Amino acid sequence: MNLFEDYKNVIKKAVENDPTKSNKIYGLSEPMLESNREYLKLLRNELPGRELSREMKLFAKGMGVKETFDYQPLGSHPDFTYLKATDLVEEHWIISGFIDVKKSTKLFNNFTKGTVRLITESIIRASIFAVNLCGGYVHRIQGDGLMVYFGGKNIEKLKAVEDALKSFSMISYFVKNDLKDFFEDNGIQDIHTRAGLDLGHSKQVDWFYSGIGESGEVTTCSLHTSLAPKMQSNAKNSGIVVGHNVTTQLRKDKYFEQRSKEIHDYEDGRKYYQYNFDWERYLVDNNLAVQNDMGVLVLTINTLPDPNRNSRDLYPIASKSKPYFNYD
Image 1: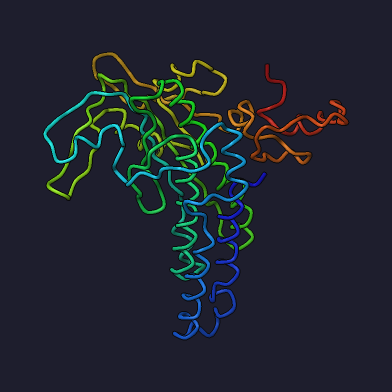
Image 2 (image 1 turned 120 degrees about the vertical axis):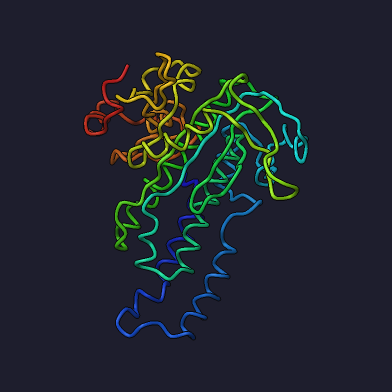
């Protein structure tokens, strides 16, 4: 099941029809650019919107969620919109997340800004879909990245943590597995995501309205909201870094590797640590991905085993495909 196929196809068509591919020597004429702008305008309509594709609906159904999403306005977590334009403050836990695409500025070296715009929007829309699929709320779009919240007043904290990890894992999968090879084939090296997630408990988070009049948003003031983007900047290529509060909710050490340096020093003897999150293993363990016969990770759901497959045939795949080999 290729969950993000529609987004990938739009990116592929935009790149293959970019006028710079065939006109690097003589330059680009205005009629040529105008023709490409019209093409990109039509191509943009092929991106999934509120109406999900068949594959997306099947995946949503398999996860046990609705096949239609109520996309909230940016900066409008429904549990806290009542705070808008007021002086009220409410304490309530939340998971803050930041994810973006690193080295995406390289795209401007190879394609017109129109093509870059459509590539970026395709990745953003795919990310928004993954966030909503897992019950999250997009708080802000920042260039080619997102700031998001997971959690609220009608969900258990553990469930929100699990949802946040699933969502960011799927976004990381999309760029690493669906797009990386295609970009490299077109001269773009080392495009990848980096992500950070942290949980602030109720006594650690203030919800309030920040701004003046309409120039503002309902947002959070929390150490853990502030730490999430720092964790993002510390993540490896295609990596996700999470805070200690996330690990204590999930209570499964096999997914987390503590980093050598803390993310925050309270300067009273306490330190707050950050952890690399093994999102590929998490997807497999939660039946959201499998490895095919080539050892490549593939997103799927409700996959049933092949009754004709001999388990001995899996050895050459598993032996080359850590971290899934010889795990308890």
